Amino acid sequence: MTARPERRAGRLGIWSAVPVVAFLLVAPVGLLLVPLAALGVARSIRTREVTVLGAVAVGAAAWWLWPVSPPPDQIVRAVAVIGAATFTAFGGPGSNPITPRVLLSTVVTALGGGLLVGLAGIWPSTAWWIESRVALVQVQLLQLAQVATPRTDIIPMVEVIPDVLVGLFPAIIALQMMAGLVLAASIGVGTGLAGPEDAPGALAEFRFSEHLGWLAVLALGMLILGVPAGAGWWAGNVLVVMGALYALRGAAVWWFLLRSRRRPGCLMAALLVVAGVFLWQAVLAAIIVLGVVDSGFDLRTRWTRSRST
Image: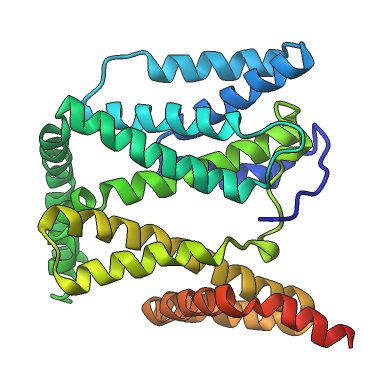
């Protein structure tokens, strides 16, 4: 997000709770608390002022990091600390826009977290822990699916959930961390825990360097060529993360188009929501393709120039 609009402290409204609640439903709270606390500490060091809210954020983050936990939680805590430290270290007045900082934090966290997991040798126990916990939920989902619907195609989808969660664990944590960093920055700017340089830009302006797409090309090539299982596992996770980024970029292009057309855009947005419910695979694929095309042709800049001429 290249745009960084000025935002004042105390501008958080009731609708600001919606993304927070959505995040807490799908991600560990620490991936939001730790970056928020890090931003508050960095702000306090720069301004030499300690706020009550900053102290509360630091205390909440310490409370989340302190207890003894199973292997997956240990990995998530390491991710939260490394990601928050990297994101904050590259911040401050005159820093880069938030998108490169988030992506850089993700790369550093992937390298650092992977090194720690490899040295500690906790991945086998992590995979076992995830599978055993998910298996309990899986049984309940299978029973609910058999009672709620006569469709038999849902059962195979439920059966592969443990394998998917274990296989895509790094990608899931990476996406959760990126969302937590952006949300923490937004909350930090709105509450005064972070400076205006940390403000996320508008969704319609979200973009990233097209050179990042070579990661997706490399990962896809590795999967097509049939590399060893370990390399293929990492390639699959990289491809999922890149797919999510391109989907977000495609959504940004679509939102840019809707925002520029105003009234017709409301109808188009409603149609997109309906199509997403019933044809979500096709809609997701179309949005990813739109993001890939925009990375090469910068569609929003072209549309802006065409309207101005």
